[in-house]
Amino acid sequence: MSEEVNEKEAESEAQTEIPVESGEMQAEAENSGVQEAEGKETEADTQESELDAAKKRIAELEAEAADYKDKYLRAVADFQNLRKRSIQEKQEAFDYANTNLLKDLLDSLDNFDRTVEAASSASDPKAIADGVTMINKSMVSMLENKYDLVAYGAVGDAFNPDIHEAIGKSDDPVAEPVLKAVYLKGYKLKDRVIRHAKVMVSMPDGSVKAEDTGDSKAENAEESN
Image 1 (cartoon, rainbow, N blue to C red):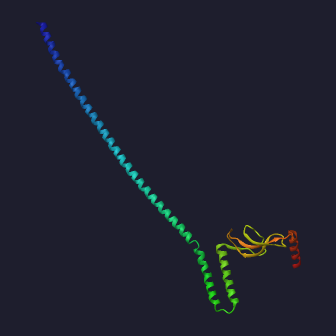
Image 2: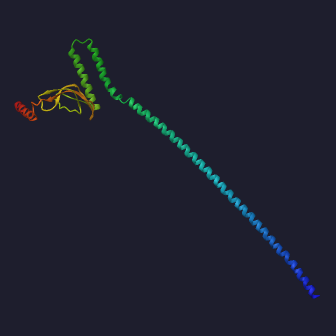
């Protein structure tokens, strides 16, 4: 009898212990499911947060790109406008470069007009010639002093092929080539020749040497003393 009682008690204890283990396993399973769900929820939240950050960054980059594009288009437009203005200013400077010179020449033209009018009724040719000479001197003085335009070329000057254009020559008793006649004066604008003088040149015929020229100059100086 005692053995049967012990067996029943053992079975009863075994049956009692089985539900405990089963409950723990169920609890663990439930906890695991909760943790897995929470992990998935956290991962979803993280992905959503990263997606929002990416969208925000894309929007910022798009706005920045649009701003750069606008600045680029404005810069191109400004450059084109500046280029057009520069071309226009250069053309105007070219077209009206001689405005000041022409204004200064107007006085001389007016004087010439008055001289022509006076010549129609003048009885003294010398008065007309004096008027023309005065106008010429005034014009030359203005061009020299204001525009650095200088005339050159006079009979007796040494011939220089860099600034003189020989249109004729003759053999003469000279020691070196000199200007025998000036057909057209030459002109320099500052240091640059803008028109060569057209001249007749006296070339040495061999009858006069450089030493002779020096001696003759000395003799002339003594005679003058």
